[in-house]
Length: 237
Image (cartoon, rainbow, N blue to C red):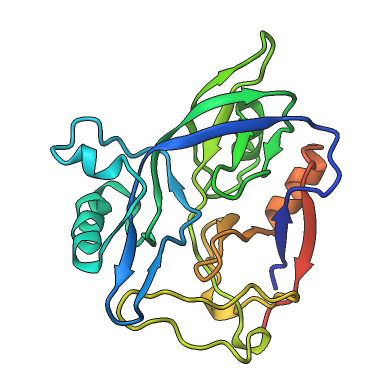
């Protein structure tokens, strides 16, 4: 059976990289009339989306809440532009990362779940080793130093869920807007039936801030000495 691992930024890192940036566009937040909650919970970005010539491009510029029906209308406008079946939660990021960067960066830079980055050489190495599902896209980051790496943004899609046994008191999400207010448990157990079989790096659909790598991904990262990542094996049930 394939092993799976959580991937996180190490608590103590020798790299100093810092980014002040945002994506060019985003889905708005939402106000749900059923659960009476205003929220935006997505950590996923779709950096290859280009809305620059879209007739309603301005609707995706400002972070704000919208009534549920308006949010759903805007979500359907961008659905053809993202990978088929992609989860599009309120607040999902769209387009390239725009801003400034400073300092030194590891080959795989997972400091912020909203903007996972990778150096081009590392991406090419992993792809050459047969790591599945890796897609990196150009950023529009401006570096405040002369010598700097070429950073690409990884598109890491939500696939797979936690097993119910590690969230026994979890209430069901809102049936109208899908909001799930349950906190991430301390001990994670993955739901085997939900895990993808065609990609080696993904997020959880119910907790998009959690990155999961397969045994193949982790072994390759370690063999290529790209490991500035906190790696922890997770049980699967």
